[in-house]
Length: 237
Image (cartoon, rainbow, N blue to C red; front, top):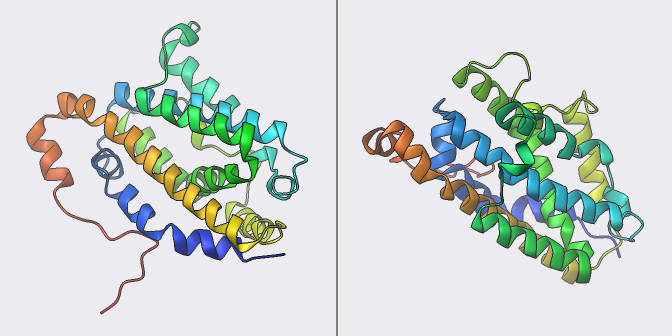
């Protein structure tokens, strides 16, 4: 049975998408307030997450639900290694560890790898489509805010193997709709995508105390006091 999974994911995660955009850490980020220590920690958590996710996807690349959305060109692990080397030096592996929420995230991914690999699609959709959609904007902000040269420290956002991101996203959505699943499984994938959003929001929120120490409580309050309508929301009059 073929279901319109791309549409279900898009519509089913709108509220989560908006909530993610209103997390204080991200609101500061998009306004150009980027602290080097916070950003490095932010990316280090992603190193652990993408490593686990990509190992899991690779191990199930022949699974009926996974093989249709198996795109190694999306992989971020190697790019994140470059960023870790930039921020932490050659001994970077000794200097980073997953945050408490990241550990919860890793446990969840491992559970899915072992028991429900089709639900990993909820995580690949949440992360990779977000990276492709807003990543270049965030990269430019980080480059400017941290005065970085070229792609140093922002390789995570640089999809060298995907020159036409708009075309690829269309290809990815088409692939989602070709996955042979039923509506019950599709709804479970949407639920998992919303849980992925929740975990990603919590990872950002973990960093807010560090960011506040860097920029000051008053500045943080001024930057985050307003509510922003999400980029996927449909504004009604």
